[in-house]
Length: 172
Image (cartoon, rainbow, N blue to C red; front, side):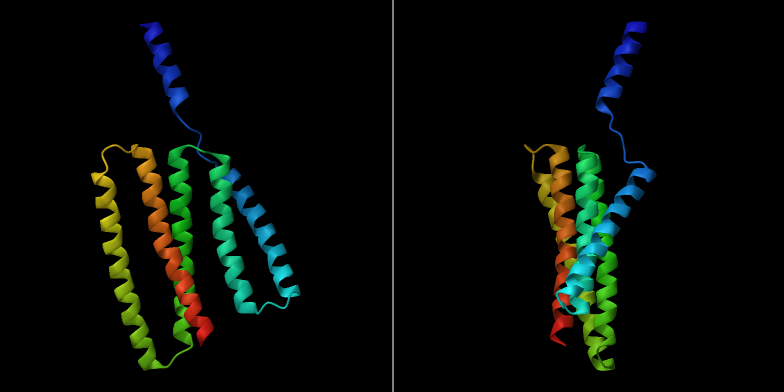
């Protein structure tokens, strides 16, 4: 019985992964914020417009934090978690740049923009359902790899919309 317990405990320890602690995540955020500050200074020194600089720094922070999290812990669960966290950050940027775009227009255009955003949310939700269905039908694919691929595709939907909104802002 003791041997069985020792083997089970050993297997649990071998198969488990260490999640990033709050302290580690805070250190990563500090590194990203420091690098983002330097990037901001360099872009301003190159006379890049403030709006472009802000967008570049915003997206840099999301991407860098995701990369740092992935490099610290390569377990598939943490990998998926890092991507999901990046999707949340992109969703916050989506809100930020959507509000900025709205603020640049009159009431009629705002209504059109609100309708377009509503349709995009519906599109995104439909696309996520399609992605989920597609990967559910994949029988010969490793479950963890499916989760990573799904998370990446979900994040890319939101990231692409942020870029699209920013392009509309630049056109105004």
